Image (tube, rainbow, N blue to C red; front, side, top):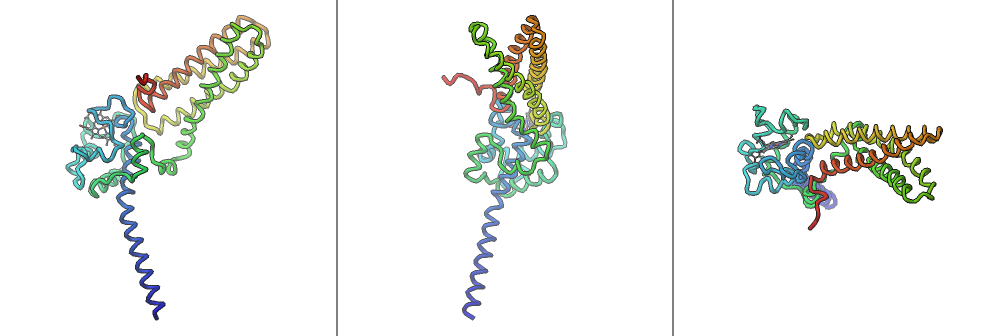
Length: 290
Ligand code: HEC
């Protein structure tokens, strides 16, 4: 009997503890969900990386700051929160994200999640998440829910380093050869770098185009980045073809054209890489620190 009593009390305590834990976890979970929604649909215009955010509102990922001293989010009062009014507004001039932008609109469920979060007092993210959020990182849970195409698109971020490094190395080899005639082995290095770098540029562009469809970037930097990437790709491929023809025919004029194109491709890929950096980290990411 004592045994039974103890077991019951223990079970009741466990259930109570579990329930309390659930409740404690709830607002934090809401905050993480809301943060993920803002990261996807708002951060490209209101995120910390934007240099001149509209109306000076560039802290959509800082949930604490949304509440502190602003009317954007009034804890417990979705209807009085400017942010909530904007995402539910029927006026296309007011509605967020702007219907004219490529940013993904919020689903009815997501709007409800934002409402619940404000109604629950707009709690901030838990400690570590908050730090990651302020640095613009997206919460890990996003990774799990993406489609296969979205996943494929994210390879852009890894693959793009290949053409940047290799095309620059190939061009550098040819520049060195201008001054150090004896280094004929650099021709072989150039050819190898071109053979890996040019197809690397093709894969970067293809994954990049897929990525752009999901990442929701929307401004002219993206268009410039795309054009530079595609042009790099074409110029690098023509340079590779030229190199191979020159290799087989010994035609010096074609070889020269191929080298000029290679140097152009290196400049283009550097510019493409830079605009990519501006998109992710903001225009001042390479500014002098002093
Ligand atoms: C494509 C860029 C873009 C995206 C994406 C975007 N906004 Fe905006 N937002 C703007 C611009 C531009 C303004 C200023 C013009 C205006 O007030 O309508 C603005 C203004 C606002 C304001 C008013 C700020 C103030 O202090 O007056 C709020 C709130 C807002 N946006 C919330 C959001 C939320 C929430 C999202 C995501 C669900 C979002 N925005 C997505 C461009 C964007």
